[in-house]
Length: 149
Figure 1 (cartoon, rainbow, N blue to C red):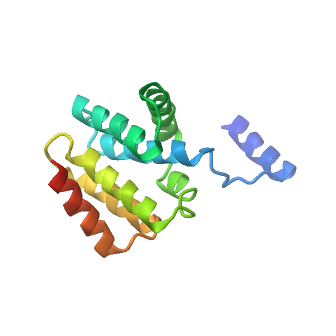
Figure 2 (figure 1 turned 90 degrees about the vertical axis):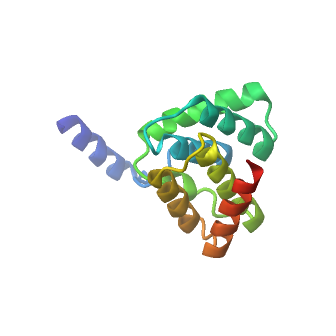
């Protein structure tokens, strides 16, 4: 505990931003949000893992190998994160259609295992709020993702 306090004071003295986001790229933030949804119910099944992979390929235009690498890094970021804000704070500059596509993609991950857990719903709802996605767009994303199945 003493070491963590010393580290905190050192950061304050050095003028480092304590609230600085550890996630360094929008792509990593997007992948992390997809991982948050898949892990919200504490059970990630193969269908959800595959949905995350395909969404990264589609949304970000990445190869399968690059998507797998990004997911591995994102899973580590999620373990270290304390809130969704760590990821959403970097994505507010995205255009409204891109934010809508992200919310829709999160719904696709939630639907991948055939059911939506209330915890998955809560993660998507909170993400939409933090990204300033209107509630009507949130519902439209949910309904359009159900039509894909």
